[in-house]
Length: 213
Image (cartoon, rainbow, N blue to C red; front, side, top):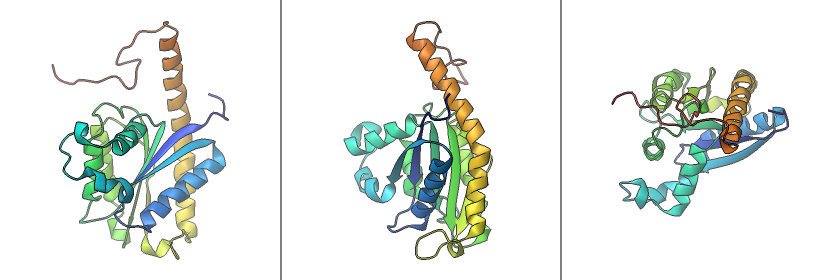
């Protein structure tokens, strides 16, 4: 893949407030990522689509505006997800959104994990809440997550040099994996389109992987 090929990045903010430090954190990650590689960015805010979940018990009952966002998540080259810490976990609405994501749509999709909270004591949310959730989807959670606490922000902007360094380090660790992942998927899709490859779970990273018969 050429270095100039844009990566389709979809960011999901689990915050229930606007303005939001969590959303600011996500935007900072997107901005810094765009400085080192071309991206096509999409930011999904639960403050905007959350009300549309009301009463929906299945994906078929969701309005088109939510279905469009779900399809964006399922076809992303890279997901960047973040939530404020609420009751020792991500917000319930964040989990509810991913309850509607197809079980096999995120197989091998790189996911950069981020969170914000009022104290450093909540930093392990990334390891104990986010990673298990995306392990269920068989996604590729990237090596370094980004945790931010209230003191890292001033007037809803990132003001901490340590947080900025953490973001840059997480991107540096992530990009080689993301580039390789995108290159492989696009090569497979091109081969499939030309009829020179068969669709199998081993060759198609988005094919269902069923563990039980």
